[in-house]
Image 1 (cartoon, helix red, strand yellow):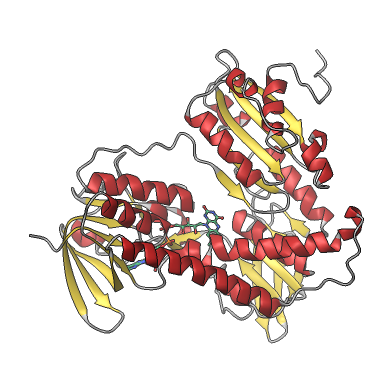
Image 2 (cartoon, rainbow, N blue to C red):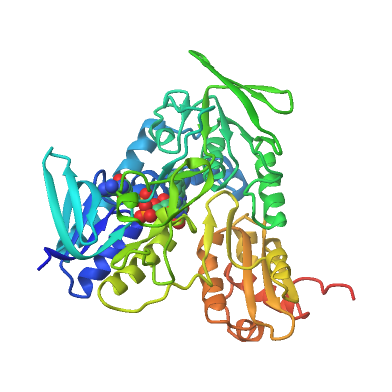
Length: 470
Ligand code: FAD
């Protein structure tokens, strides 16, 4: 009889969700982790960045205290304390995950796991020993790491990754961010608030490439208002580093000097060294990182029965909550169930100021998919709650099927967008219609009224904005 029902490799949000669910279903579970429990999200991603974003939001408020009729003289950051605060949050949450794992009877095995057979994981222990774990099913949740480009190697002193930038103990005078995706944009928000001169270089034609153009335009305008320098459709051709900092030569001929450089150009999937080739597990080349993504079916099973893969390593969404959900689904299947992964309503959030969030199809994608759509929009400037909070920038946009009025997608830029998107996710997931949205009484004054108002606008009967001209 195998030692375990399920062995999970990796303890990030995908891995620990899988382990928790399998244990809830009565399984004997081991979770193998070579580094810190909680993975990227908890230790080097979602949580530490949000801790810094929350702290710098307070600083922004203090700097604008006068707008609220308040006096607040000379607020300034203490970087060491901000980092210590972030570390306290991370340690507390990591402790919470470890405690729940213990409560569920999950064994945390410290070391590097490799597939050693269809039902076997070999663990090179952090203590130097080797252990073999046998299991009825294996779930791979090995995640991803910052992508390092040959031309822009990290030295973690001047040229930083999204991990090493979280350890800075001093506020840099200037920061060059290479890559204007969500990670680059969130760090830009933090450091601009701290008083750093921020420059972003993005190869494509907008920040947050791939998102609705209106979202790109809004965040670019907000960043420019905060005195950030943006270079779009521009590449860093050369990066020279010396004791004083870095000098980047751009494809547009300009040179930029900066104290620190953040390279945030993507993620490398942790698919190497797991023994995938030996087991004949199918992968597919994904992006410039070298490692392939593990291919899985709708049940998150690889081509080898009983071996599942979830989270960043399958290269789908690279979002914590998606990995988390995949972990739950894979665990149910590993325990004998038949749960299908459903990606119809995946919400995504970007914690810039203003915040951004989206779910489902935007107008361009819906049209590309051959849908005839109607759209509605509501500016936060017309929402009472946003006005009294002095956060009038941004909008809610809703995309619905022209005939059936089924809600296909929602995009939000503005205050608390990342919280507001959950109502929209439910609407998309349950295939709700615009009528169902607007017939639902929304409390006043709240930011959530903006979603209802966008729905009214899509139906051609806006209440708090001027009707569109016919
Ligand atoms: P990971 O979290 O990467 O965890 C994988 C774990 O497996 C790691 O602990 C690793 O040590 C371990 N491991 C790997 N190989 C082995 C092995 N062979 N043996 C044992 N252990 C192994 N997502 C969001 O949804 N919201 C956000 O706000 C957000 N912010 C982010 C900010 C930053 C700066 C970054 C970098 C990422 C952010 N993400 C965010 C993305 C999110 O962190 C990832 O999508 C998520 O962590 C992926 O979860 P995972 O479990 O697949 O992998």
